[in-house]
Length: 114
Image 1 (cartoon, rainbow, N blue to C red):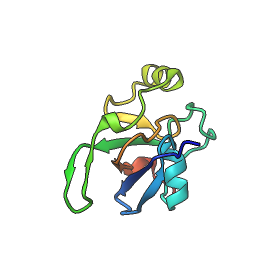
Image 2 (cartoon, rainbow, N blue to C red; image 1 turned 90 degrees about the vertical axis):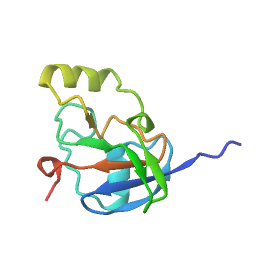
Image 3 (tube, helix red, strand yellow; image 1 turned 135 degrees about the horizontal axis):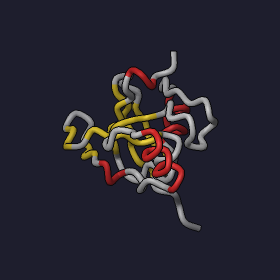
Image 4 (tube, rainbow, N blue to C red; image 1 turned 30 degrees about the vertical axis):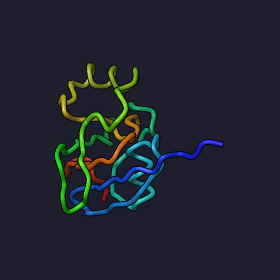
């Protein structure tokens, strides 16, 4: 029986943090950790309300290195959305991006639910 790897995720600006199983979507991690990340399409990659950005670099206070490569590659739904809606290149859809390694995620104010 294989065990799932835990990865660390830190959400900015909320400061919420915790461990989730590798392969968890950014959206699901946000829900688990109580982060205000908007999403009205239910995670199918259509509304674009869950856009996030990865902060890359070494974060000594968190003892992690974060990189865009610590998220899964964009899937077809995310590529189609990005092309049709002209999503900024550094942005990802939180409902489609899977966390594969330690990562710092920035939730831009426009995509925080209130």
